[in-house]
Length: 64
Length: 316
Image 1 (cartoon, rainbow over the protein chains, first blue to last red):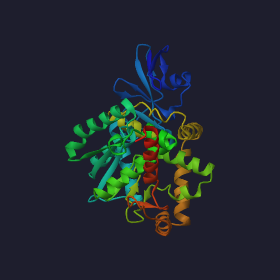
Image 2 (image 1 turned 90 degrees about the vertical axis):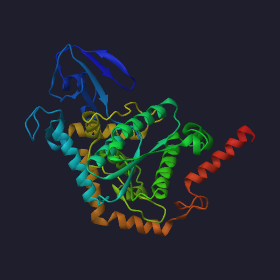
Image 3 (image 1 turned 60 degrees about the vertical axis):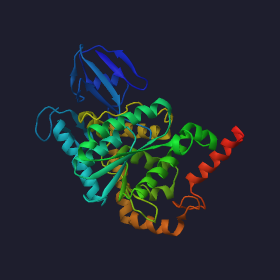
Image 4 (image 1 turned 45 degrees about the vertical axis):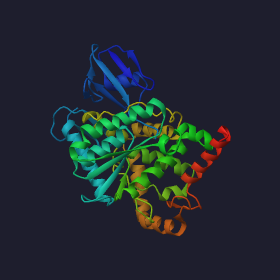
């Protein structure tokens, strides 16, 4: 699946199917500091992502 | 995962509440948390005029959106700091929200351009006064938001600080035992002296991730990229540490910050303690009249230093 990341903006290819929780673990990202967005929808950590999915992992923490 | 209220498919899980919500029930949860914050801290009423400090980020735009949807009279002020294209993109996000959402509630957006009034962008000003950019930015924003609230006769100024912001700030203040700052860590600060607007933080019950989720689910187009000046900031480090603790033990952030507020309220009501201290130590700035502990406020001192440095470098 294609995974879009920020800070800096980039795309990586991750093998699916995979649960959101596992995807974040593989990317070494904390769930509390990120949202996973598929299309227009947020997906929960137990959601299974297909190999054909395209998702955005959006950081939610700002330094201000 | 299923919504704990209506049992349809959930879009977000909230381990600290041992809950999960679908889109409509999550929006209701967020509105309820803000309404509880406003009531518990006696922030404002339906007749009050509120000035929201907006940046183009998720927190401040979500706050503006929530207050309007809850039926409050909320206008906003955006301070354009002159950080190149980042400020332009942020302003565009605020303007779009103002035109497409806020305008339908009859709300107004005010814009202050630092380059116009202060004569230079934030980076140049920070260089001129030899101070870190973030502290220069903080001084200018605090000054301009307070000034706008007073001059435009708003009853209260609201900022988008969330639970993560407040818990991280508390951690920083405790690590360095900044007792004076601890007094001002409450979500509702009174208009303690003439010239100071009342300041409130209606999002203090919501985690940063929850506010971001609200923005995404309500299709609020905010600036996702981080301010280029924030890189390496201590706040980011404190937030990271707290989120690692939160992951191991959900509810850590709220227990830390809310627990602090409960202790503070038991010891002495923060509002009255702050008012007494402010009345004893503050008087009008000799240049602009805003309250300060010194002869001149930090904003006027900074601008005076910037002018001197500027004329030295240009010879004018």
